[in-house]
Image (tube, rainbow, N blue to C red; front, side, top):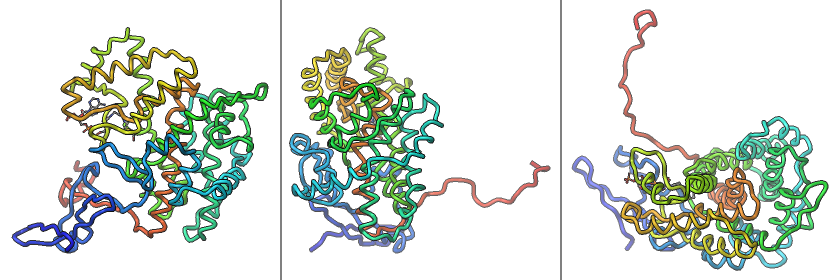
Length: 428
Ligand code: CMC
């Protein structure tokens, strides 16, 4: 017999169904609660609220488990390509060789962006943060592809938009960097794979080809996979809620990029490197900064530490820490920031403040050190996160539209003034 939850309100007992996910996660289905009782639930920050049923990503924060469509993140990060993982997330299965070739070929057909868009780049100030440029550019793609505005398009037409956005995000990302240094943009080269092409557009110059280093490509591939999806986080929930209004995919992803930019979310990777640089410049006194992070009067937080759902370890952080050692060693880079990061981690993990609050390094703690080692400028770190997260956002949007989820519209508990009469200006 299926479980039920009982709730007693105003002396009356109500029964609510309990639903169970495929990994035995349990939820009380409150979808009829207001109708039955007149009550709503209150959960600021959605710490206990399941916003959807999803078959894409499974995450167990207590055990440090992360699966995409049933495959462990450890296995995917070690063995798969980012394109395979993108296919897996978006279409539900790892592709066969033919499916993968078709997927990649279709994406390669759309890597160019309309020449008119180049003029938009020029209008941004050189110091413009690339995340601001990227979200504007992605949103403006909808104006070039007006057919994407129709929410009732065929599956084939939706797929075309998916291919377009996957193809164009690396181009727009690399061009936002080139524009910030006022260099000529580099056009995509379709003989390269997805990660190689991005690196080419970032680092090649009209005067000089970029040497594609397999160590760098493999590092980018791994980092993109680790970022590819993370169930209902801030940017993904933004994507689902914007998409639920039947807004087009470009605007929807643009909203996700804006949500990701914040320093408590994807923007943390830039903040981590800036923090490590600051500690380094300050003489590397890790204890002093740990004290600052613990001081409630001080706004400083240890960036790259803590997570809303991981309470023992972030499995992505473990993979990245190892990759960080490997990449730096293979590239022969000796970065003092890595030593500071490791010392910070060690001190924090032994400290009662961090232990009692279950604060551990998250995905952003070591990723910046790899990005720095492979030449990605600090302001581009969150763009790298966005590039990796794109297939996840697409998969979540696709799932939501296919399941015909209703428009997202939370309720609230109003705590403002009660009804009062308008007072004319002269009497105030
Ligand atoms: N440094 C110092 N104290 C911290 C930190 C930190 N990084 N993170 C949390 N705390 C403390 C916090 O002050 C609070 O203490 P108290 O109970 O005494 O008030 C307690 O730990 C719980 O923190 P919270 O802010 O209520 O937890 P949350 O679940 O709302 O926030 C978080 C999670 C990730 C926003 C937070 O840990 C944080 O700000 N971390 C730094 C930013 C960061 O690295 N973000 C990237 C997250 S992973 C990438 C992604 O998927 O976005």
